[in-house]
Image (cartoon, rainbow over all chains, first blue to last red; front, side, top):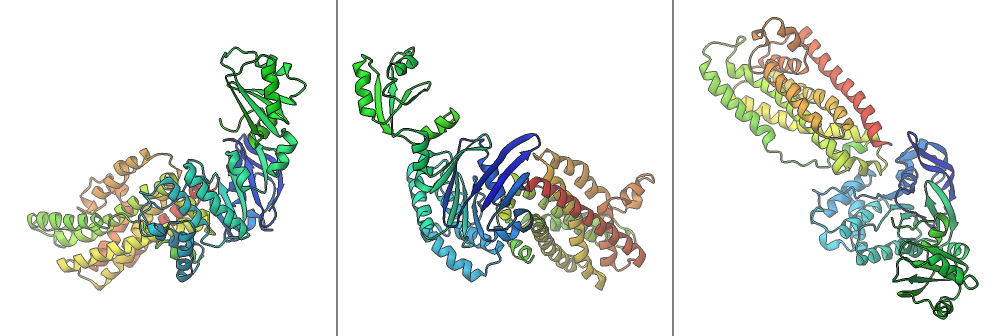
Length: 305
Length: 245
Protein backbone atom coordinates (compact mmCIF):
# COMPACT_ATOMS: atom_id res chain seq x y z
CA UNK A 1 0.00 0.00 0.00
CA UNK A 2 1.13 3.53 -0.75
CA UNK A 3 0.06 6.82 0.76
CA UNK A 4 1.13 10.33 -0.25
CA UNK A 5 0.02 13.36 1.67
CA UNK A 6 -2.80 11.37 3.22
CA UNK A 7 -5.11 13.67 5.11
CA UNK A 8 -8.32 13.29 7.08
CA UNK A 9 -10.42 16.18 8.24
CA UNK A 10 -13.52 16.20 10.39
CA UNK A 11 -14.93 19.63 9.83
CA UNK A 12 -12.21 21.96 11.03
CA UNK A 13 -10.34 19.32 12.93
CA UNK A 14 -7.43 17.71 11.11
CA UNK A 15 -7.00 14.19 12.42
CA UNK A 16 -4.40 13.06 9.90
CA UNK A 17 -2.12 15.71 8.48
CA UNK A 18 -0.47 14.69 5.26
CA UNK A 19 1.37 11.47 5.99
CA UNK A 20 3.43 9.40 3.52
CA UNK A 21 4.23 5.73 3.75
CA UNK A 22 4.82 2.61 1.70
CA UNK A 23 4.17 -0.86 2.97
CA UNK A 24 5.40 -3.88 1.08
CA UNK A 25 3.86 -7.32 0.82
CA UNK A 26 4.56 -9.53 3.82
CA UNK A 27 5.72 -6.64 5.99
CA UNK A 28 4.54 -6.04 9.48
CA UNK A 29 4.12 -2.30 9.82
CA UNK A 30 3.20 -0.42 12.97
CA UNK A 31 1.71 2.93 13.85
CA UNK A 32 2.89 3.83 17.32
CA UNK A 33 1.44 6.78 19.12
CA UNK A 34 -0.73 7.94 22.00
CA UNK A 35 -4.52 8.16 21.93
CA UNK A 36 -5.65 10.91 19.65
CA UNK A 37 -2.63 10.73 17.38
CA UNK A 38 -4.75 9.92 14.35
CA UNK A 39 -3.98 6.22 14.18
CA UNK A 40 -7.56 5.00 14.03
CA UNK A 41 -8.49 7.61 11.43
CA UNK A 42 -5.59 6.42 9.32
CA UNK A 43 -6.58 2.80 9.73
CA UNK A 44 -10.16 3.50 8.74
CA UNK A 45 -9.00 5.11 5.54
CA UNK A 46 -6.73 2.17 4.76
CA UNK A 47 -9.60 -0.20 5.52
CA UNK A 48 -11.75 1.64 2.99
CA UNK A 49 -14.29 2.49 5.63
CA UNK A 50 -13.67 6.21 5.76
CA UNK A 51 -13.25 8.53 2.78
CA UNK A 52 -9.90 10.26 2.27
CA UNK A 53 -10.04 14.03 2.72
CA UNK A 54 -6.92 14.80 0.72
CA UNK A 55 -3.85 13.09 -0.68
CA UNK A 56 -3.59 9.74 -2.43
CA UNK A 57 -3.95 6.24 -1.08
CA UNK A 58 -3.57 2.97 -2.91
CA UNK A 59 -4.27 -0.34 -1.24
CA UNK A 60 -3.34 -3.51 -3.12
CA UNK A 61 -2.84 -1.22 -6.06
CA UNK A 62 -6.43 0.02 -5.99
CA UNK A 63 -8.05 3.30 -5.04
CA UNK A 64 -10.39 2.98 -2.04
CA UNK A 65 -12.64 5.69 -3.40
CA UNK A 66 -13.56 3.60 -6.42
CA UNK A 67 -12.84 0.02 -5.50
CA UNK A 68 -13.49 -0.04 -1.78
CA UNK A 69 -15.65 -3.12 -1.95
CA UNK A 70 -13.10 -5.06 -3.96
CA UNK A 71 -10.28 -4.10 -1.64
CA UNK A 72 -12.29 -5.10 1.41
CA UNK A 73 -12.87 -8.52 -0.09
CA UNK A 74 -9.13 -9.13 0.12
CA UNK A 75 -8.28 -7.63 3.48
CA UNK A 76 -9.16 -8.51 7.05
CA UNK A 77 -10.08 -5.82 9.54
CA UNK A 78 -9.83 -6.03 13.31
CA UNK A 79 -11.41 -2.82 14.63
CA UNK A 80 -10.65 -1.19 17.94
CA UNK A 81 -14.00 -2.18 19.42
CA UNK A 82 -15.25 -5.69 18.89
CA UNK A 83 -18.33 -5.63 16.71
CA UNK A 84 -19.31 -9.18 17.45
CA UNK A 85 -22.87 -10.40 17.57
CA UNK A 86 -23.33 -11.12 21.25
CA UNK A 87 -26.53 -13.09 20.82
CA UNK A 88 -25.07 -15.57 18.37
CA UNK A 89 -22.61 -18.36 19.09
CA UNK A 90 -18.91 -18.16 18.38
CA UNK A 91 -19.25 -20.37 15.32
CA UNK A 92 -22.30 -18.51 14.03
CA UNK A 93 -20.43 -15.24 14.15
CA UNK A 94 -17.85 -16.71 11.82
CA UNK A 95 -20.47 -18.25 9.54
CA UNK A 96 -22.43 -15.03 9.16
CA UNK A 97 -19.31 -13.01 8.49
CA UNK A 98 -18.13 -15.46 5.90
CA UNK A 99 -21.45 -15.14 4.11
CA UNK A 100 -20.89 -11.41 3.76
CA UNK A 101 -17.98 -12.36 1.53
CA UNK A 102 -20.26 -14.60 -0.49
CA UNK A 103 -18.20 -17.65 0.40
CA UNK A 104 -19.89 -21.06 0.17
CA UNK A 105 -21.09 -22.38 3.51
CA UNK A 106 -18.93 -25.45 3.28
CA UNK A 107 -15.79 -23.39 2.81
CA UNK A 108 -16.66 -21.12 5.72
CA UNK A 109 -17.29 -24.14 7.90
CA UNK A 110 -13.86 -25.59 7.15
CA UNK A 111 -12.07 -22.33 7.65
CA UNK A 112 -14.03 -21.59 10.82
CA UNK A 113 -12.89 -24.84 12.36
CA UNK A 114 -9.27 -24.15 11.49
CA UNK A 115 -9.47 -20.60 12.74
CA UNK A 116 -11.10 -21.60 16.01
CA UNK A 117 -8.24 -23.99 16.57
CA UNK A 118 -5.72 -21.35 15.60
CA UNK A 119 -7.16 -18.93 18.13
CA UNK A 120 -7.77 -21.63 20.72
CA UNK A 121 -11.51 -21.16 20.81
CA UNK A 122 -12.60 -24.57 19.58
CA UNK A 123 -14.05 -25.55 22.90
CA UNK A 124 -16.32 -22.53 22.95
CA UNK A 125 -17.52 -22.88 19.38
CA UNK A 126 -21.15 -23.33 20.36
CA UNK A 127 -21.26 -20.90 23.23
CA UNK A 128 -22.90 -17.52 23.00
CA UNK A 129 -20.42 -14.71 22.66
CA UNK A 130 -21.80 -12.47 25.38
CA UNK A 131 -20.34 -14.28 28.42
CA UNK A 132 -16.87 -14.76 26.96
CA UNK A 133 -13.89 -12.93 28.44
CA UNK A 134 -12.38 -9.88 26.78
CA UNK A 135 -9.40 -11.88 25.57
CA UNK A 136 -11.60 -14.50 23.96
CA UNK A 137 -13.75 -11.91 22.26
CA UNK A 138 -10.64 -10.32 20.85
CA UNK A 139 -9.40 -13.66 19.58
CA UNK A 140 -12.77 -14.24 17.99
CA UNK A 141 -12.63 -10.86 16.29
CA UNK A 142 -9.24 -11.80 14.88
CA UNK A 143 -10.48 -15.22 13.79
CA UNK A 144 -13.39 -13.53 12.12
CA UNK A 145 -11.17 -11.15 10.22
CA UNK A 146 -9.32 -14.14 8.78
CA UNK A 147 -12.37 -15.98 7.46
CA UNK A 148 -11.86 -14.52 4.02
CA UNK A 149 -8.22 -15.60 3.99
CA UNK A 150 -6.98 -12.05 3.50
CA UNK A 151 -3.63 -10.95 2.10
CA UNK A 152 -3.56 -7.94 4.36
CA UNK A 153 -4.62 -7.69 7.96
CA UNK A 154 -5.41 -4.39 9.63
CA UNK A 155 -5.42 -4.37 13.42
CA UNK A 156 -6.41 -1.33 15.44
CA UNK A 157 -5.10 -1.58 19.00
CA UNK A 158 -5.39 -5.36 19.06
CA UNK A 159 -4.46 -5.94 22.69
CA UNK A 160 -5.71 -2.87 24.48
CA UNK A 161 -7.52 -3.85 27.62
CA UNK A 162 -6.24 -7.41 27.73
CA UNK A 163 -4.31 -9.04 30.53
CA UNK A 164 -0.68 -9.96 29.85
CA UNK A 165 -1.39 -13.61 29.23
CA UNK A 166 -4.01 -12.89 26.61
CA UNK A 167 -1.72 -10.34 25.09
CA UNK A 168 1.16 -12.75 24.69
CA UNK A 169 -1.06 -15.39 23.17
CA UNK A 170 -2.30 -12.89 20.64
CA UNK A 171 1.21 -11.76 19.79
CA UNK A 172 2.16 -15.34 19.16
CA UNK A 173 -0.76 -15.81 16.78
CA UNK A 174 0.06 -12.67 14.91
CA UNK A 175 3.64 -13.78 14.61
CA UNK A 176 2.53 -17.07 13.10
CA UNK A 177 0.40 -15.20 10.62
CA UNK A 178 3.33 -13.08 9.67
CA UNK A 179 5.31 -16.22 9.01
CA UNK A 180 2.56 -17.35 6.70
CA UNK A 181 3.08 -14.21 4.67
CA UNK A 182 0.12 -12.11 5.72
CA UNK A 183 0.94 -8.40 5.53
CA UNK A 184 0.00 -6.66 8.76
CA UNK A 185 -0.64 -3.07 9.69
CA UNK A 186 -0.98 -2.59 13.42
CA UNK A 187 -1.69 0.44 15.55
CA UNK A 188 -0.78 0.48 19.18
CA UNK A 189 0.22 2.71 22.02
CA UNK A 190 2.18 -0.06 23.70
CA UNK A 191 5.85 0.15 22.83
CA UNK A 192 6.45 -3.46 23.75
CA UNK A 193 3.83 -4.52 21.26
CA UNK A 194 5.39 -2.41 18.55
CA UNK A 195 8.81 -3.82 19.29
CA UNK A 196 7.55 -7.39 19.29
CA UNK A 197 5.33 -7.36 16.25
CA UNK A 198 6.62 -4.83 13.77
CA UNK A 199 9.35 -4.94 11.14
CA UNK A 200 9.01 -1.23 10.66
CA UNK A 201 6.97 1.37 12.34
CA UNK A 202 6.02 5.00 12.22
CA UNK A 203 5.87 7.12 15.33
CA UNK A 204 2.70 9.15 15.07
CA UNK A 205 1.66 12.17 17.03
CA UNK A 206 -0.83 14.92 16.37
CA UNK A 207 -1.74 13.53 12.97
CA UNK A 208 1.82 13.48 11.66
CA UNK A 209 4.65 11.03 11.41
CA UNK A 210 7.47 12.01 13.70
CA UNK A 211 9.79 9.26 12.50
CA UNK A 212 9.81 6.01 10.60
CA UNK A 213 12.02 2.93 10.64
CA UNK A 214 12.60 -0.42 12.28
CA UNK A 215 12.48 -0.50 16.07
CA UNK A 216 16.22 -0.91 16.41
CA UNK A 217 16.93 1.81 13.84
CA UNK A 218 14.71 4.23 15.67
CA UNK A 219 16.29 3.47 18.99
CA UNK A 220 19.77 3.82 17.56
CA UNK A 221 18.88 7.09 15.86
CA UNK A 222 16.97 8.79 18.60
CA UNK A 223 18.27 7.35 21.79
CA UNK A 224 21.35 5.93 23.43
CA UNK A 225 21.95 2.30 24.18
CA UNK A 226 21.08 2.48 27.85
CA UNK A 227 19.06 4.61 30.21
CA UNK A 228 19.66 5.28 33.85
CA UNK A 229 16.48 6.05 35.73
CA UNK A 230 16.85 7.83 39.03
CA UNK A 231 14.30 8.65 41.66
CA UNK A 232 15.11 11.02 44.49
CA UNK A 233 13.40 10.97 47.84
CA UNK A 234 13.37 14.71 48.11
CA UNK A 235 10.86 15.97 45.59
CA UNK A 236 12.61 19.29 45.43
CA UNK A 237 15.86 17.82 44.29
CA UNK A 238 17.19 19.93 41.51
CA UNK A 239 17.23 17.25 38.88
CA UNK A 240 18.51 19.64 36.27
CA UNK A 241 21.50 20.46 38.40
CA UNK A 242 22.16 16.79 38.90
CA UNK A 243 22.16 16.24 35.19
CA UNK A 244 24.41 19.22 34.67
CA UNK A 245 26.93 17.68 36.99
CA UNK A 246 27.08 14.58 34.85
CA UNK A 247 27.39 16.49 31.63
CA UNK A 248 30.46 14.67 30.44
CA UNK A 249 29.20 11.15 30.70
CA UNK A 250 25.56 11.68 29.80
CA UNK A 251 24.44 12.46 26.28
CA UNK A 252 20.98 13.63 27.13
CA UNK A 253 18.61 13.77 30.01
CA UNK A 254 14.90 14.04 30.53
CA UNK A 255 13.43 15.40 33.72
CA UNK A 256 10.08 13.71 34.15
CA UNK A 257 7.70 14.56 36.98
CA UNK A 258 8.65 11.45 38.90
CA UNK A 259 12.03 10.44 37.54
CA UNK A 260 15.22 11.65 36.04
CA UNK A 261 16.26 9.82 32.88
CA UNK A 262 19.90 9.90 31.95
CA UNK A 263 20.75 8.73 28.48
CA UNK A 264 24.14 7.19 28.28
CA UNK A 265 26.00 4.35 26.62
CA UNK A 266 27.01 2.81 29.88
CA UNK A 267 24.41 2.97 32.62
CA UNK A 268 26.42 1.30 35.34
CA UNK A 269 29.35 3.61 34.92
CA UNK A 270 27.10 6.61 35.08
CA UNK A 271 25.51 5.27 38.22
CA UNK A 272 28.93 4.97 39.78
CA UNK A 273 29.61 8.59 38.94
CA UNK A 274 26.31 9.60 40.48
CA UNK A 275 27.36 8.02 43.74
CA UNK A 276 30.79 9.55 43.46
CA UNK A 277 29.23 12.94 43.24
CA UNK A 278 27.68 12.30 46.61
CA UNK A 279 24.18 12.08 45.29
CA UNK A 280 21.97 9.50 46.88
CA UNK A 281 19.01 8.60 44.74
CA UNK A 282 16.16 6.70 46.31
CA UNK A 283 16.17 4.18 43.50
CA UNK A 284 18.25 3.61 40.44
CA UNK A 285 17.49 1.47 37.44
CA UNK A 286 19.64 0.74 34.46
CA UNK A 287 17.77 -0.46 31.41
CA UNK A 288 18.08 -0.59 27.66
CA UNK A 289 16.51 2.11 25.56
CA UNK A 290 13.05 1.45 24.27
CA UNK A 291 10.61 3.01 21.87
CA UNK A 292 9.18 4.90 24.78
CA UNK A 293 12.44 6.80 24.91
CA UNK A 294 12.29 7.42 21.18
CA UNK A 295 8.82 8.80 21.55
CA UNK A 296 9.87 10.95 24.46
CA UNK A 297 12.73 12.36 22.44
CA UNK A 298 10.60 13.09 19.42
CA UNK A 299 7.56 14.58 21.07
CA UNK A 300 8.61 15.50 24.56
CA UNK A 301 5.77 13.44 25.97
CA UNK A 302 5.39 9.85 27.04
CA UNK A 303 3.28 7.31 25.19
CA UNK A 304 0.97 6.58 28.09
CA UNK A 305 -1.22 9.52 28.93
CA UNK B 1 -25.27 -7.60 -4.91
CA UNK B 2 -26.37 -11.06 -3.97
CA UNK B 3 -25.02 -10.40 -0.51
CA UNK B 4 -28.24 -8.95 0.80
CA UNK B 5 -30.02 -12.23 0.27
CA UNK B 6 -27.59 -13.89 2.60
CA UNK B 7 -27.17 -11.19 5.17
CA UNK B 8 -30.86 -11.01 5.85
CA UNK B 9 -30.68 -14.50 7.19
CA UNK B 10 -28.62 -13.01 9.92
CA UNK B 11 -30.90 -13.43 12.80
CA UNK B 12 -32.16 -10.31 14.35
CA UNK B 13 -33.57 -12.68 16.84
CA UNK B 14 -35.89 -11.13 19.26
CA UNK B 15 -38.57 -13.52 20.33
CA UNK B 16 -41.12 -14.17 17.63
CA UNK B 17 -43.83 -14.48 20.21
CA UNK B 18 -45.81 -11.39 21.00
CA UNK B 19 -45.85 -9.98 17.49
CA UNK B 20 -48.82 -12.07 16.50
CA UNK B 21 -50.05 -13.05 19.89
CA UNK B 22 -51.32 -9.56 20.57
CA UNK B 23 -53.23 -9.11 17.32
CA UNK B 24 -54.91 -12.47 17.75
CA UNK B 25 -55.91 -11.43 21.25
CA UNK B 26 -57.15 -8.09 19.95
CA UNK B 27 -59.14 -9.87 17.29
CA UNK B 28 -60.68 -12.20 19.80
CA UNK B 29 -61.41 -9.55 22.41
CA UNK B 30 -62.52 -6.72 20.18
CA UNK B 31 -63.91 -8.72 17.33
CA UNK B 32 -65.79 -11.37 19.15
CA UNK B 33 -66.29 -9.64 22.45
CA UNK B 34 -67.10 -6.17 21.24
CA UNK B 35 -68.59 -7.52 18.07
CA UNK B 36 -71.24 -9.40 19.95
CA UNK B 37 -72.39 -6.09 21.42
CA UNK B 38 -72.68 -4.42 18.05
CA UNK B 39 -75.93 -5.78 16.72
CA UNK B 40 -76.06 -4.17 13.35
CA UNK B 41 -73.53 -4.17 10.54
CA UNK B 42 -70.57 -1.87 10.36
CA UNK B 43 -69.95 -0.61 6.86
CA UNK B 44 -72.11 -3.44 5.61
CA UNK B 45 -70.48 -6.35 7.43
CA UNK B 46 -70.20 -7.93 10.86
CA UNK B 47 -67.90 -6.08 13.20
CA UNK B 48 -65.49 -8.99 13.32
CA UNK B 49 -65.20 -8.95 9.54
CA UNK B 50 -64.76 -5.19 9.58
CA UNK B 51 -62.09 -5.25 12.28
CA UNK B 52 -59.87 -8.11 11.18
CA UNK B 53 -58.29 -6.66 8.02
CA UNK B 54 -57.84 -3.36 9.82
CA UNK B 55 -55.90 -5.12 12.54
CA UNK B 56 -53.82 -6.85 9.92
CA UNK B 57 -52.68 -3.56 8.45
CA UNK B 58 -52.13 -1.96 11.86
CA UNK B 59 -50.11 -4.90 13.04
CA UNK B 60 -47.96 -4.59 9.95
CA UNK B 61 -47.42 -0.95 10.79
CA UNK B 62 -46.45 -1.76 14.37
CA UNK B 63 -43.97 -4.40 13.36
CA UNK B 64 -42.50 -2.40 10.53
CA UNK B 65 -42.14 0.57 12.83
CA UNK B 66 -40.71 -1.36 15.75
CA UNK B 67 -38.15 -3.21 13.68
CA UNK B 68 -36.93 0.06 12.26
CA UNK B 69 -36.40 1.81 15.57
CA UNK B 70 -34.37 0.06 18.24
CA UNK B 71 -32.78 -2.59 16.02
CA UNK B 72 -31.45 0.12 13.69
CA UNK B 73 -30.13 2.20 16.55
CA UNK B 74 -28.61 -0.88 18.16
CA UNK B 75 -26.85 -1.78 14.94
CA UNK B 76 -25.27 1.64 14.88
CA UNK B 77 -24.70 2.58 18.46
CA UNK B 78 -24.53 -0.33 20.85
CA UNK B 79 -23.84 -3.54 18.98
CA UNK B 80 -22.31 -1.80 15.99
CA UNK B 81 -23.49 -4.57 13.72
CA UNK B 82 -23.63 -2.32 10.69
CA UNK B 83 -19.98 -1.45 11.14
CA UNK B 84 -19.06 -5.10 11.24
CA UNK B 85 -20.85 -5.49 7.91
CA UNK B 86 -19.10 -2.50 6.38
CA UNK B 87 -15.71 -4.04 7.13
CA UNK B 88 -16.54 -6.60 4.45
CA UNK B 89 -17.23 -6.16 0.74
CA UNK B 90 -20.75 -5.01 1.69
CA UNK B 91 -21.66 -1.40 1.03
CA UNK B 92 -24.14 0.93 2.72
CA UNK B 93 -26.79 0.03 0.13
CA UNK B 94 -26.32 -3.63 0.98
CA UNK B 95 -26.67 -2.90 4.67
CA UNK B 96 -29.91 -0.96 4.26
CA UNK B 97 -31.50 -3.25 1.70
CA UNK B 98 -30.52 -6.25 3.78
CA UNK B 99 -32.14 -4.92 6.90
CA UNK B 100 -35.32 -3.90 5.07
CA UNK B 101 -35.42 -7.30 3.40
CA UNK B 102 -35.31 -8.93 6.81
CA UNK B 103 -38.14 -6.68 8.01
CA UNK B 104 -40.11 -7.63 4.91
CA UNK B 105 -39.56 -11.30 5.64
CA UNK B 106 -40.76 -10.82 9.17
CA UNK B 107 -43.83 -9.04 7.84
CA UNK B 108 -44.52 -11.89 5.44
CA UNK B 109 -44.39 -14.40 8.27
CA UNK B 110 -46.64 -12.46 10.59
CA UNK B 111 -49.10 -11.42 7.92
CA UNK B 112 -49.54 -14.91 6.57
CA UNK B 113 -50.15 -16.32 10.02
CA UNK B 114 -52.63 -13.56 10.63
CA UNK B 115 -54.45 -14.27 7.40
CA UNK B 116 -54.62 -17.93 8.35
CA UNK B 117 -56.12 -17.01 11.72
CA UNK B 118 -58.60 -14.71 10.00
CA UNK B 119 -59.67 -17.48 7.68
CA UNK B 120 -60.13 -19.77 10.65
CA UNK B 121 -62.32 -17.16 12.30
CA UNK B 122 -64.38 -17.02 9.16
CA UNK B 123 -63.72 -13.38 8.32
CA UNK B 124 -62.36 -13.87 4.84
CA UNK B 125 -64.92 -13.42 2.11
CA UNK B 126 -63.00 -13.12 -1.10
CA UNK B 127 -60.23 -14.77 -3.08
CA UNK B 128 -58.65 -11.34 -3.34
CA UNK B 129 -57.77 -11.68 0.33
CA UNK B 130 -54.60 -13.42 -0.70
CA UNK B 131 -53.39 -10.05 -2.00
CA UNK B 132 -53.72 -8.68 1.49
CA UNK B 133 -50.44 -10.43 2.21
CA UNK B 134 -48.26 -8.28 -0.06
CA UNK B 135 -50.31 -5.23 0.83
CA UNK B 136 -49.72 -5.89 4.50
CA UNK B 137 -46.01 -6.24 3.86
CA UNK B 138 -46.00 -3.05 1.83
CA UNK B 139 -47.80 -1.20 4.61
CA UNK B 140 -45.21 -2.35 7.08
CA UNK B 141 -42.37 -1.31 4.79
CA UNK B 142 -43.98 2.04 4.16
CA UNK B 143 -43.40 2.70 7.84
CA UNK B 144 -40.13 0.85 8.23
CA UNK B 145 -38.23 2.75 5.56
CA UNK B 146 -38.81 6.30 6.75
CA UNK B 147 -38.54 5.32 10.39
CA UNK B 148 -35.22 3.61 9.73
CA UNK B 149 -34.09 6.80 8.03
CA UNK B 150 -35.05 8.68 11.17
CA UNK B 151 -33.49 6.17 13.55
CA UNK B 152 -30.14 6.28 11.79
CA UNK B 153 -29.95 10.02 12.38
CA UNK B 154 -30.72 9.87 16.08
CA UNK B 155 -28.10 10.03 18.81
CA UNK B 156 -30.40 8.65 21.49
CA UNK B 157 -33.82 7.07 21.73
CA UNK B 158 -35.90 10.00 22.94
CA UNK B 159 -37.20 10.52 19.40
CA UNK B 160 -38.70 7.04 19.44
CA UNK B 161 -41.21 7.78 22.17
CA UNK B 162 -42.32 10.77 20.14
CA UNK B 163 -42.96 8.52 17.16
CA UNK B 164 -45.05 6.26 19.34
CA UNK B 165 -47.01 8.94 21.11
CA UNK B 166 -47.70 11.23 18.17
CA UNK B 167 -47.45 8.80 15.29
CA UNK B 168 -48.06 5.13 15.69
CA UNK B 169 -50.61 5.15 18.48
CA UNK B 170 -52.90 7.86 17.10
CA UNK B 171 -52.74 6.19 13.72
CA UNK B 172 -53.58 2.87 15.28
CA UNK B 173 -56.68 4.36 16.90
CA UNK B 174 -57.98 6.67 14.21
CA UNK B 175 -57.14 5.24 10.79
CA UNK B 176 -60.24 3.14 10.36
CA UNK B 177 -59.08 -0.01 12.12
CA UNK B 178 -61.67 0.00 14.88
CA UNK B 179 -64.34 2.15 13.34
CA UNK B 180 -64.95 3.67 9.92
CA UNK B 181 -63.25 6.98 9.31
CA UNK B 182 -66.67 8.30 8.40
CA UNK B 183 -67.46 8.26 12.12
CA UNK B 184 -64.89 10.97 12.74
CA UNK B 185 -65.97 14.63 12.82
CA UNK B 186 -66.16 16.02 9.29
CA UNK B 187 -63.10 18.24 9.52
CA UNK B 188 -60.94 15.38 10.81
CA UNK B 189 -61.77 12.96 8.03
CA UNK B 190 -59.58 14.41 5.26
CA UNK B 191 -56.67 14.52 7.71
CA UNK B 192 -57.16 10.88 8.59
CA UNK B 193 -57.38 9.97 4.92
CA UNK B 194 -54.05 11.62 4.27
CA UNK B 195 -52.23 9.39 6.70
CA UNK B 196 -50.42 6.20 5.62
CA UNK B 197 -52.19 3.64 7.77
CA UNK B 198 -55.56 4.70 6.41
CA UNK B 199 -54.53 3.51 2.98
CA UNK B 200 -53.14 0.26 4.24
CA UNK B 201 -56.27 -0.47 6.23
CA UNK B 202 -58.62 0.51 3.42
CA UNK B 203 -56.82 -1.57 0.83
CA UNK B 204 -56.53 -4.63 3.04
CA UNK B 205 -60.15 -4.40 4.03
CA UNK B 206 -61.24 -3.98 0.44
CA UNK B 207 -59.28 -7.04 -0.64
CA UNK B 208 -60.37 -9.28 2.20
CA UNK B 209 -64.03 -8.36 1.89
CA UNK B 210 -63.88 -8.35 -1.88
CA UNK B 211 -65.39 -4.92 -2.53
CA UNK B 212 -62.41 -2.82 -3.56
CA UNK B 213 -62.67 -0.57 -6.57
CA UNK B 214 -59.77 -0.49 -9.02
CA UNK B 215 -59.33 3.25 -8.92
CA UNK B 216 -59.43 3.45 -5.15
CA UNK B 217 -57.04 0.53 -4.89
CA UNK B 218 -54.68 2.32 -7.24
CA UNK B 219 -54.63 5.38 -5.06
CA UNK B 220 -53.99 3.40 -1.89
CA UNK B 221 -51.26 1.40 -3.56
CA UNK B 222 -49.55 4.42 -5.06
CA UNK B 223 -49.54 6.16 -1.70
CA UNK B 224 -47.92 3.23 0.08
CA UNK B 225 -45.37 2.66 -2.65
CA UNK B 226 -44.47 6.34 -2.75
CA UNK B 227 -44.01 6.45 1.00
CA UNK B 228 -41.76 3.39 0.89
CA UNK B 229 -39.64 4.81 -1.90
CA UNK B 230 -39.26 8.21 -0.29
CA UNK B 231 -38.40 6.54 2.99
CA UNK B 232 -35.77 4.44 1.28
CA UNK B 233 -34.16 7.42 -0.39
CA UNK B 234 -34.07 9.33 2.88
CA UNK B 235 -32.64 6.29 4.63
CA UNK B 236 -29.83 6.03 2.10
CA UNK B 237 -28.95 9.60 2.98
CA UNK B 238 -29.00 9.23 6.73
CA UNK B 239 -27.32 5.82 6.65
CA UNK B 240 -24.49 7.10 4.49
CA UNK B 241 -23.96 10.12 6.64
CA UNK B 242 -23.92 8.09 9.81
CA UNK B 243 -21.95 5.05 8.72
CA UNK B 244 -19.31 6.46 6.39
CA UNK B 245 -17.49 9.26 8.20
